Length: 238
Image (cartoon, rainbow, N blue to C red; front, side, top):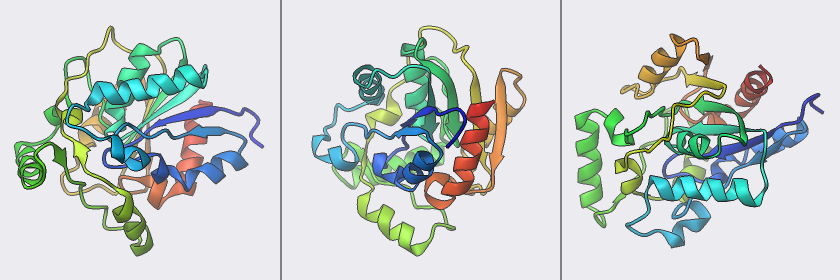
């Protein structure tokens, strides 16, 4: 049992859902922590609720409702990948409840920025083309990292669903700069585009941040759960 039990609330990545954090629950339980991994509207077990109007604010509201109904206070907020967009908005709206914010290989937006603002033109074009070949409002999933085991690829592929494009297009609105303790965990087994390298560099050189690296590819909750557990305990204790 950990000497200081904590509550962790996860804002998961795109195309994913709470189920993708399955390997982390027993590790958190064993350490005496509480891990909440709610699923956004239109994804995972809530895929039947998908519609074209779902956007970033929808997913921020999903998380704020969990905070309200679970009566969460002094918790650790985690944003993974696209979840960094969501977590930033959540931290802005629930400043009195969030104790600290941890980004895991995630986007770190400022006021007025969308996820698409961080992608190269080539990637934006690829997403647009893939979306238009489907129903016109959902983006198909990116490929899984090459070091993902065949079993995990099968598990992920069966469950990941297309993402409403407005989640990527909508610009985040923040009421004021965030001042709560923030940490960035950079996954060093980078993809060729290294989308998150800019955030690693930014946070590494900013005294307002604590910067960490993990020897894992983009989704350590899937490929390196034990290492991520160790890292999260270390960061949250700091």
